[in-house]
Structure formats: structure tokens, C-alpha cells
Length: 380
Image (cartoon, rainbow, N blue to C red):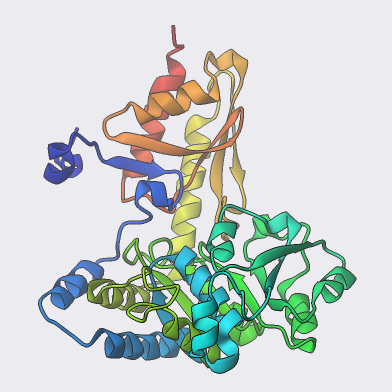
């Protein structure tokens, strides 16, 4: 193992670092932070500050950078979902109505509230919404279904971004039009939708959603424990009123001064990057994998597009046939047993995916070398 993969802190805990060819997954630490992030966090750690005012100033700067009316840093994208839905439930009074705030999450005084979602878009992040106390109402792809589901209890419509969520749901522009005609706000979960960086303003400023939520620790390469909520001023004001350090449902969703400056540094850095060149580099990596794994017995490899999160870049799909002597689970386990660990995506019972986005320079070659070594050696 090279010195590059020797981490004294991990080693002291008996842990090995990971070559991540899977995705910017929370269970693998998200992404590696951009170069300016750690210095910004270290500087923040050296001084006390008025957190409420820092939140406001950072939010103002992020709003300018992302071409939105307002912005707010959250403790991850799931927390952003919780606070955005809370804003829609309590936002009639700017989010500061003490009756509405104290009524969360049981809604005994204000009455039942619902959030409309597409049945095809239901996922594990439902919990971030349900903890507000709302009930989820499913609709299908016909325009009339959404309009019919909206009533006096509807707090908002939640729409999940990404090509992998598009089937079974109306396009966002149609959702916004139907919901806004009924006076209902629209939220977009876009946690993993960077790249493209234009997502930061596309869903809100261009398409018209009231707010969009992003992970700070995925494509933005900020602190893993951050998220970014952008959109209309009333949504952000209500989210802020119900978030830490205020005593409301979001009190536990705390963001420190270090994360605030770290995410700001990450967004500034991301917007300064050459995104077309970055995407071209991803494509070159995938071509290298496809070419390098071609011709191995029992193995089929092809370019898959888009990514597992519906982002506009490809990945290599490696199908493990019986003639290879391997099955998917044994191969995944063998890659994880390498030093450093190698993590890959799991697509179906016979296929793994290699994603270029989380890799550092040269790690694509490590992945290719270890895969070729394992696949050339039939297991006992």
C-alpha cells in the first residue's frame, strides 16, 4: 500500500481508507472536500461569532452565487427536506407563528397537513418529510391526478430530480404550473444533482419551484454534514425560524460556524471549475474501463448513462456471467478486501457499476488493475 493511503487516524482505529468507485454515498463519507474547504473551516474554528448573523450573511452570499432570492445552510440534504416542509406547514406567518411552531409535529391545533408526492418517486427520504407530522399523498403521472389531490390540507408538492426519477411523474414545469394555479408551493429534492452546477438555479429561478435542496457533501464537495436550501425568501425565512439555534422542530439540525464557512468556500470553488472539462475527464475514465475490461472471459462491459443519480455523466457497467467463475457478491467482497478497500456500485444481481465521479487522480487505474487481476483468477 502506498503512503498515499496511510492515514494515521484511520489506522489507529483499525480502519483502511477506501478507493471509491461507487458514488458520493453518505456511508462512504460523501465526497472529498474541495481544496479551500478545510482552510475555511480551520479559520472559522479560531473565533467565536454570532451564529444567527453568520447564517444570514452566508445565506445572502450563497443566494447571490446561486442566482436565488435566498439561501440557507442545513445539516445535510435530509435536514433541508425537513426544514423546507416545515416552512410550508408554518410559513403562512413567516414561519414565526408560535401556535404553528408549537403544534409541530402533531398538528393538533392547526389540523392535518399533507405533502403530495409521485408514487414512482417514493424513497427512503420520506422519513425526513414525515417527521414534520404531515401525511404523504401519492399521485400518478396523469395531470388530472395532481390537480385532484390538492385540497385545503396540502402544504406542498415534493418532486425528486434526476433522470432516474422521471418515469411515472410529470415534468417539473407542469407540476409547478398545476400547483401554483392552486396556490400550493413546490419543493425539489435535488440532493445529488450536481453536476450540472446549473441545477443550483435551474429548478428555482428558471423552472419556478419555490425551493430546491442540495447535498453539500456530494457534487459540491463541501463538508459532508451540510446541505443547501435555496429558493424564495419566504421559504428560507420560515426554515430559518424553525432551525437551530431556535427552539423548534429543527433545533437538533445544527450547523456549526465551521460548516457554514466550509460550504460557502465549496460553492465558490465549484462555480469556478471548468465543468465541461470535468465531465470530459469522467468520460475518458469510463472509456478506459470499458476498453481495459473488454475480452475477459464471462465478462461484458459497457458505458451506462446517466449516473446512478441521474447526473449527466456515464459509468462503466460490468456484467458478471457464469463463465467468469465469479458472481457479483463475491466480486464486490473481493474488491472490498483489497488494501485500500475498493467500493463499487451494485446495479442488479449480475452487474456492478464503476463511477468516475468520486475518484482521485490515478485511482481509476487501481480499480482497473484489481478488477483485471481478480477476473483473470477464477476463485476456488
